[in-house]
Length: 463
Image (cartoon, rainbow, N blue to C red; front, top):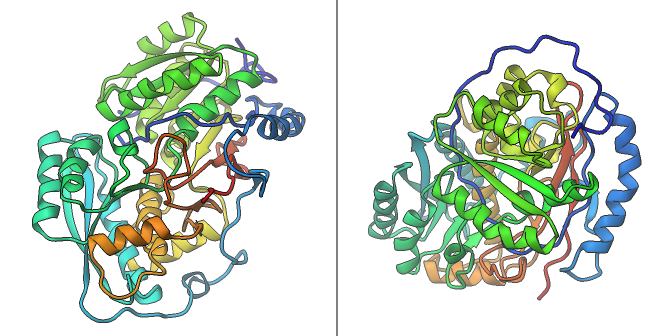
């Protein structure tokens, strides 16, 4: 299968690059199909225009959840801001918190699965911003209690237990492949746990005290299924890091793909595989349909260069964590052009969300790369958690936080490019812990950069 509109490559291909690093990845449950994505190729720009109308038609036809208050499609927008606005304008007026700090746990996954130090650095900067410009939580400053899982289930459980022992009011969980090990002791103690994205039926099915801010179905099943339909193929092959969280994601997605008439094949690749050429050679020889890549930038670099090395020229989709400057340096731009990208933040474009994030890490951080998706994700998680508690007053306890989160109105997700959250349990059927619906879609241009992000599958979350 060749990508529609793709011309024969004319440049020499550089050597394969780097080894994969592991992020925490969300898991799917049943969700509506999404509109078709743009095809790849040097002439993709013309094809994208033709596909735009069909994308809208597909969305209107297949979106099965939500009410009729919106069409779920539009340009990604955020809080009002203009291009070139100053850092001070992006941060907003001073609104300092005061009084006794509110202790919030932060669990990150730095370790063998990849150095995620950026999460700790961004979290520290974000809390300073929230305390100086957003009045902290209920007017009181936020104080972080940090624990790192080092990608080890035992250490993950230790972090969960430590949060209970430290008597924190809530726990924000960043990127780690041992989500359930962290979550179980937290949940048993009745502490609210907040994730950017989470996996596993137990976590997503929790009605007590678990809140995941983004739609876990969007990138795992919705986007690749839509691309498969656009390319008139009944196959999707997912290239995924071989760890429990990602395996759970795609095991749960099998039924969703089957219902859509698509056969899902999962190619799990062991952590630390720098050269994926052998796996990609077998994949390409088996008529893979759409190839969907789910990992972070180092993992995706290896997968993309493996596909390139074996001459694969079919449709490719991947998640937003794949797209960084490192990816653009290690993979020829000609191979990135036209790749479809599912995301939950509009990284790589100039918009209110990225301007706010850059202002925060520039003002309150040091040497933080604003192009790293994992940094943007932890900012969005902390800032989204704080924004969800805007109506909380009085005592700040696990109970009052849980009550406030479940009662919150629809709220724009900071850093989310116009995505909104509402944690009343109705965002995704069968996953009451999920607070978001839909996501952002873009395609990469001839420089490997995102083009315009579109809000897709975003409908109001019902009462």
